[in-house]
Image (cartoon, rainbow, N blue to C red; front, side, top):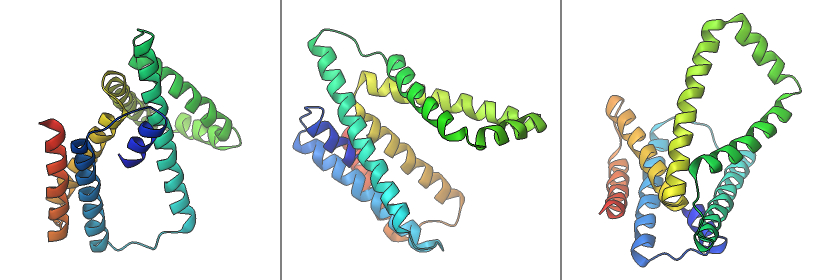
Length: 194
């Protein structure tokens, strides 16, 4: 949420209330607490510099895209035009598909297609996964077009937090610090809803 809010402030001419800042702070800090508490209980290797740089780059891109989407909404409202979710989705996915195909042309695309033709049951699973991904993308772009990218970030963060809670309830549990994080995040989410 933080990069999207920053991008919306600087690129999208957004204004946030103190309540919205406090809600975002609660969601972000609670999610961070859960991640840190969950990370301590798992045995994982140290993060690499390259990995951290990629995460920072992805967060920066989230902020830029969120700000540009917000600016597009403001501009469309001024010109009395409607932002349609499938227009956003089409152009975003077109650029992503062209970039992915160009990067995959070296050998991955041929190898992947060969594998799918040799394993039709796997290919069917790929098609199902793609359909689920398309439905998820449609939901995300609907949210962005009808609300804004900050609301979408809050929704996706909530979904991630719920996924963590479900996996915790099915698995080994969560340390007390993790439950504190879930409580803090839940207060921020409740502030968004109420």
